[in-house]
Length: 70
Image (cartoon, rainbow, N blue to C red; front, top):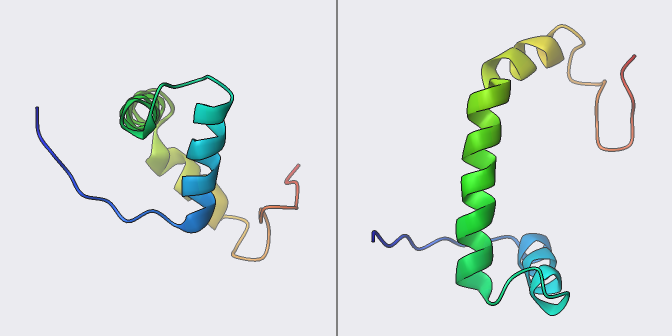
């Protein structure tokens, strides 16, 4: 199995630790492995490039964390 060293932002580390505390995962290694796997599967099925192209048509001011695009 390959090894990768990753520096995570504090907010992601806190969210992973919360999932572990809630019993979703045994430890951070299991959590990170599963979350990366899910992310890759999602990327392959949804197509990230399509999402980026759609976002570009609205410009940088629309679609932020607290905004909805209709």
